Length: 246
Image (cartoon, rainbow, N blue to C red; front, side, top):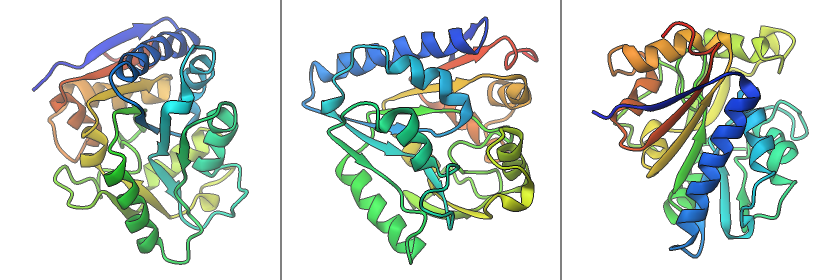
């Protein structure tokens, strides 16, 4: 079991800046030995400061294949809450990637979409995962009741628990719980932790309990983010608000 490399910053902006520099340094180092690398992005307000700072740094985006870790099922294609749309606004449309691979939450068959995205990830295995942790300790949409540390699937359809759906309201993405979709497509725990490098950005007081569980609770699917303590190379970035219970 590894000790999570944890950095506590003064505020969200400092967290975003420090994490962006660390991630960019890792990207630059990998590109010295590889023709291209594969990045998986998280889409959430918790990532705003990180993404905006990442765009300010010198990165050869044209040698990066981009993926994202989850998507709602059944939202309209242009819904601003869609995670692909969030990442378009915040990074994918801002720079020129080698390729960007979106999960299609409007696919006629969600299972077929899982199979399609699985093949892409097998072809382009992740080098770096850029992620957060949910209020219920989920990583991607692996909520406690569906998280499986030994998952045989790489991408799967899941139902979202009430704490996860409430977080989307708390984050201001939806105005009420009834608007939040019940299902999503998510990358599973094993593919996320298969990346050699993980950068995890977790700002805000609402995440303080999840941070406490991540670092102190038993490693189990009850707290999905505890799996990060088994990974040899995770950088966890907190601000004073998210770290207040430590």
